[in-house]
Length: 96
Ligand SMILES: [Zn+2]
Image 1 (spheres, rainbow, N blue to C red):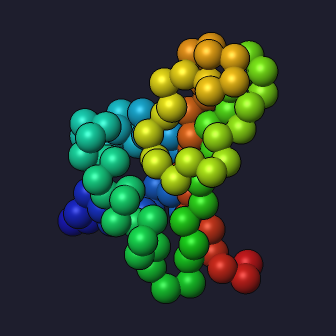
Image 2: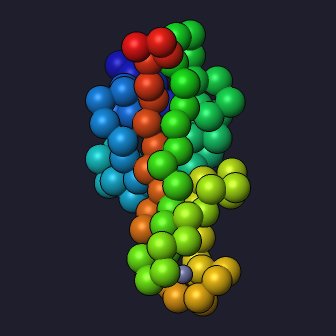
């Protein structure tokens, strides 16, 4: 029986997923997933690194690179639009 955190890790080793996708697949609230992600980001496990595909403004293309928060930003700082793609998370094998 996997813990929720282990289950999230296994999913992220297979493919990049957003907060919403993880919460739907595991029937957890996004808040719970976010908490686990915070731990996984700091301790991805031996041989793995935590990768964030940053959120992007779908209106002007602004990339939220410097943002280390895991949540989806609510609005673009440049054009103020709210159509922001969700960041995705993955666990990648190091040196692979
Ligand atoms: Zn924008």
